Image (cartoon, rainbow, N blue to C red):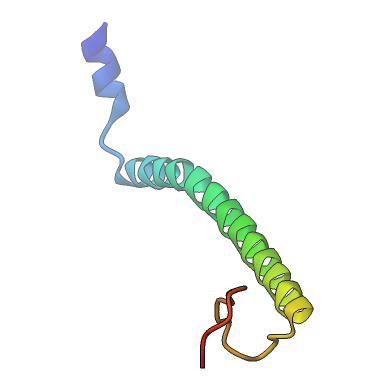
Length: 77
């Protein structure tokens, strides 16, 4: 029975090529989808973080300047 099925199968390069590219597409689709979602979420997080940092700088009055740590202690002159 198995030998009859092997004889019917044949050696069709076009079908093997279709099966190969179908497998590649099936394997890469989730990688592309989840990778795209991860990049999108990371960009939103990065923009939100930058916006919050900008609001904090505006509240302290250091917009545009370098952020330097400040101390409550006086430095003797």
